[in-house]
Length: 533
Image: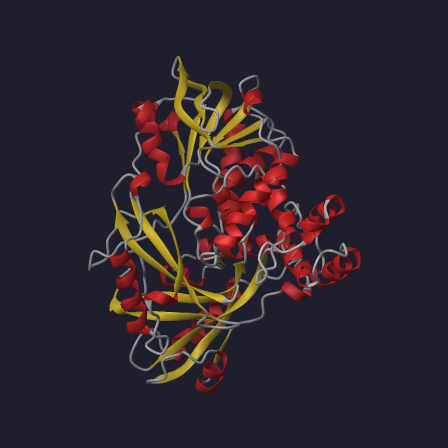
């Protein structure tokens, strides 16, 4: 991928997508796969906001049982398996444990029934998945088995645990890039650091956009037959800034926070009921409290998700020290054995998501239940414009499929089957990762440390040789950026030359994982900056 903003103003596109998060990336990939001429514009770096700051969990929808929403469960289960199948180097099954107690939450017998129903609904969860990445059946386990799997569990009145499998994406930034690279291979044009300033309207139709290249400060007008707005929390604010009449929708927001802490669990994700009461206004069966999850990730733990109402400008959002302290207090009340302190917090992941207007009896903040595709021709008579308000990383591909179905209808083009759930993402054509690692070990350059090979395969999948080739140019590129992390200098160079990295943050947070588990140190930042220069 190479950045060429001057080409965009000379081309008329079938579809112009605003926003380079996971929803925009999936719409771009789907539209390109169906033969449309596609342009995606992102005002910052690809995935710089909420999409990069998730809990890394690919949900199968077990929690939707309390809503009796089996349709939503089926969609989540299908998409979880799809992501494992098309991106097996990045998405893998992970065990989850929810302890059961005599005095709080669902009892062991009820959870046993819930797990049985979940497995029944997910009867085809392993369809076309290799043996190594299949989802085992769920079951309940004893006190002893629960404590053996996770020693930090609160033992008071413990009766056992529910043991089931969901999936984890170990690098959500790379998955988003793989989606974009797949779209690019099919002819899509992609631009980061280009901000859409207003829509171009003529006779009640959107004809394209006016945009500014943030890096050069050049203005451009880009023609498109249809615009799809996937700008997340900026969805209605972007529209109201230029053409308020075009989008009579309001997206209420909540702030979602996940703490990256020192390691608390190993090999299993732990579900912990909050000590504070919580009532889901839409649930048929209420658990009485919200569950937090502590998941193992890259020798760290991800703790969350904490949610709070947010009514301000998305550009002004932040997480305060007071909020972090309150979150630590809440999780320590639920899991006193963990004893998490402020010093244990290495990084704070946060983003803005759509919230439901429905409130629980305690006025608890509620995450929106469904993604919404807005057709502005129906809403306000403005043709040539769709907006997508996404909720979950897990179902972004499926929502994109529905969006592109509508795009084809709007453009009066022949309906073309969607293949994004079948075709692997860039680097995802893998049958067995262990075999791929062995092949990579045989092909690795002499200058590349063996401990880096598995990391490169897990990051770039079947495209690992693209990273290896830099060592042929300069042996120093095979060296690690810093000694205690497997990221190589070649990955920094690759991020600049082939993945449109423009700033130090792009490389440290999104092309590599150097900054995503905590501050990587001055030496690391200096090395990356010199390589980029």
